[in-house]
Length: 260
Ligand code: PEP
Image 1: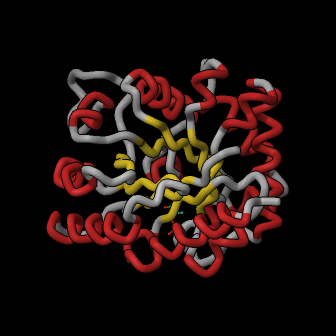
Image 2 (image 1 turned 135 degrees about the vertical axis):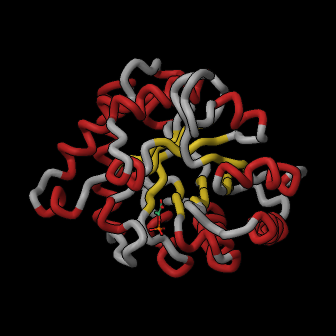
């Protein structure tokens, strides 16, 4: 069965390396050696090499929030996959809605980064999800299908099995609005059917699909208990150790009970 995976996206926070190190230390000591739930933190790029030694000896992965598709060259301000690996990264978030909608990142751009991440041996967390208008226009499945089709183009089933997806309805990110477990499960099940059609049933059954969008300690358990929800990508609540650890604990109790 798929192991639940909880990742924290710190976005452009906190404001100092000292605060970032303190946050990573608090998460590390709270997680201890718990390995029944996969955990990663994704700090701003400038803190990655400071946080890598903090996480040494813990099972917590270190993720970046973006990368460039090219391995090197004249790309001012950009960071390559090899640089992220050199800084200690194991994971990279790709196609977050704040990049798709704020920076005009297209599915094709995400696809280029995805291939580059896999070539660099990073575990990609590829974000997809519809806007409020798209949901209200009954376009959720169309949008998600299009994002999957183009963002995942050219992957082999074996490569796909190592990719993490994050279904993040844009209207639920940072808004305090959360998809109900029924809404989220319905889209996750749709995603898995799409993966099965494209990559085969066996691969689809292996792919970890996180939910993201205002996940908190008090709503995590019911989301994580859904059969096709395999973890959470957490923004705001990942900046408060108690809240983030509460989500991990919810994942541990769902794991202990089993999904039935
Ligand atoms: C995110 O940034 O991916 C996210 C889901 O944010 P939040 O948890 O704050 O909604």
